[in-house]
Image 1 (tube, rainbow, N blue to C red):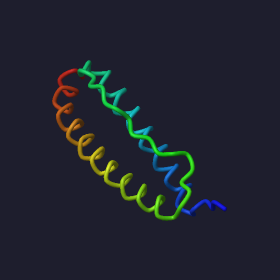
Image 2: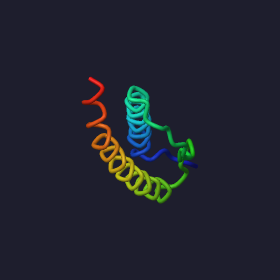
Image 3: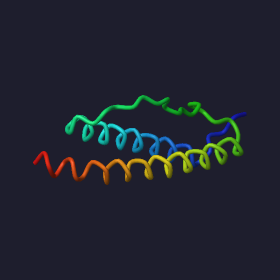
Image 4: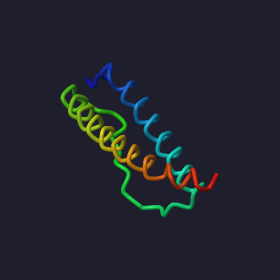
Length: 87
């Protein structure tokens, strides 16, 4: 019998927050007419059957989140001078 790991709801909440951050960044980039790059959005299976799968997905999600935060920070820093000039 498959059991839902206690970390699954937290993972789903993190995914929701990441999507929200992506939308916010896209809106900011549209405001200043920054070129939009297309990239594949990673996805997780809806139900992770084993504890190892949850741990593995948690680790992968954390690595992707760190990478996203790093790139978002760089984007905001590079957009800051342009946004100041527009205002």
